[in-house]
Picture (cartoon, rainbow, N blue to C red):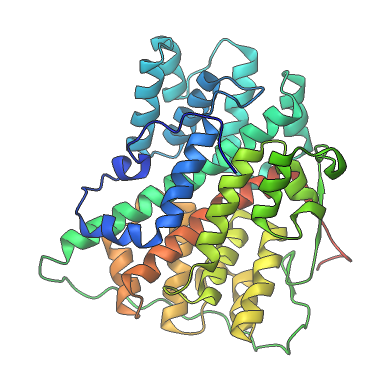
Length: 391
């Protein structure tokens, strides 16, 4: 499938934001997941394509500046500020959006309020928030574009933060090591249940759930070849999924996200797939995304042939984990998901001390960041449908 937009800038945005030098070890590590690198940059290009309907490029850049400022992602905020200035945007408006000050335009004010909520409190997304966007004049494709953009920025912020921690650990490895970090505290006891046994804890479950969209999905029978190609890139089931049919309103965004998803979750080597699913489940639990948590809890159980840690994650993520390695993975996932600006070389060092290789650390960063993206779409474009009440 070909793209219809200019893929400039040529410079990789993630590399520039970390920053990573061409021959730096952390950059060489990143290039071991070259499909993720390409899809991440491809997603960036799609998010700011002039062909996206309903939101101007300037509006999308203002959203990006606000999201990165709220996230305290200084280098990314600087990138979007520089793009706005280069495009001739009003300096006073740029300053107001970057500082969180009130803006005069009612439509932009609604969009920025939605942005801040989705970045900081995705669980609070609801049908009312989506309706407010429609009332402000956004079409269904524009709402999907906005949701994709904010969710992608959440991913971008966490990839940069994780790579910055890896780069800092790279420098720290050249110095004498300090004292070893404290061992993670033990999780609550949860016995492994027989396979396929429903787990229902604090509103979370490993059961198969449905999902009901708040926006009209694309009609497959009337879908364009571009939309069908984007759906097929995700999975053979995407043409029957209400979620992916909603995202198909912006097919190039969906295409690049699908490539990134499959490259992150299914790439050979590196972190075992079960542990990538664990990172995804933890991020989903912390964000309150019941649907995503259910799907990836199921996948963990299928791959690991056990579910004890899933019960722990549902009950109390901060203390979950059945081994030192699992505990470290869970704690890192929580920190990167909730406080990306605080992830440090020490966090990377802790993962390495429980046996993770650098490529495994990178896979975990990508998995958690990906679900910062996925959760924000699931939570704010629709709602889970339960087979029965969850206690």
